Each structure stands twice: as C-alpha cells, then as structure tokens.
Length: 222
Image (tube, rainbow, N blue to C red):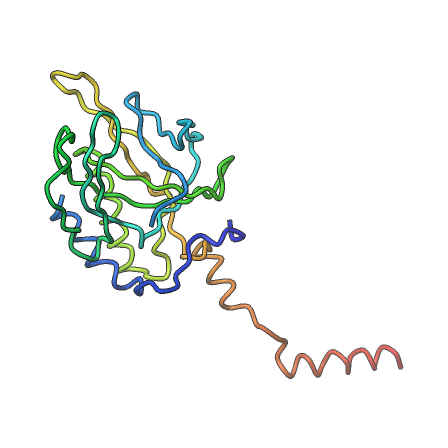
C-alpha cells in the first residue's frame, strides 16, 4: 500500500493538535468525490448508482476531515447544508427552509479513501444525522485522539466498514454503521514497520565501506 499517497498535509495543523478537537465530538453529540452511506438493509453503498461496497475492503479515514454542522432535508432532497471543520464552532444558520421536514438537523461526517480491492484509490465522504451513525463517527474520532496521544506519527486508522443493529419497537431492526479499525498508518500511507525501516536505511555507503570496495577490487585484479 506504500504506493498510495493517502492524504496530503499541506496547510493542515499538526497531528498532535487533533486529540482535543476530536475529543470534542463526544460532548457535542474535506469532501470526497462520492457519497458513502449505509442503506436501510445494512449495506454500505456509494455513488449515485448506489454501488455496494466490496466486502472486507479497507478504507483509510483522514483524521483531518471530521466535520460537523447542520442539514435540512425535504422530500428526499437536501434543501440546505452548513458544515465546517470539527476544530471550529458549528456554522451559524438562520431559519430552516419552509419545506424542511425536520428543520435543521445535527450532522457529522468524515472523509475516507479506499486502500484495497477493486475500489482502491477512490475517495468518499460520509455524513450522517442518525444517533447510531453519529455514535460511530464519534467512536472512531475518539480512537484517533487516543492514538495520536500515543503515536502521532501514525494517526490514520485503516478500517473495514461493518454494521450493527438494534430493534426498534415500531420500525423493527435498524442497522447502524460501524468502523472496525484493523491497523494504523502514517499520513503518506506507510505502515509503522515500513516507515521505521525506511527511516533507518542509509542514503549512501559509509566512507570506510566506500573506500574498501575499490581496494578489494584492485587486490583481485593483481
């Protein structure tokens, strides 16, 4: 996976500043190229054609992509949306559009990039207003915050998209999204072991070794 440059860091705060911002999500409750969501039957799907996510595919969550704010839904369409980075206060909104069925709803989100399987390299945005969905986003945010405090060089969780469920007394089984963290990597996509190995590789032979090589060659020639 080292060939995938997972996330650019230009203009972003240091990863050590993530913990406080991400932990703030627990108290309160970047956009990708496609929209990722969980269907009512529990399937993870993406895009306008609602393609089903490949089972057990791995996705890297951008730790700088967490957003929060508000959305107003009409009859199956978005009437208004105001979102901003989790490190800043929620955007201010006025009165909800008249046709909004539930007014302004709290919404949280994040961005991911597929790092394995048929969709490798695809970026997606996941936003959610449901209680179960917000809990899933908050849980992975807190996991990142804890990871950054231990190892800020590998702040990116690689997850598999899972589903949970609960039984609603009126609507029956309700599926909820889950992010199963399988490992942690650096922002450039390197795994910890590979990053450590690359950092210890010499950029050029030591002077003594470089001098010994031609001397040995001359002895063999003579």
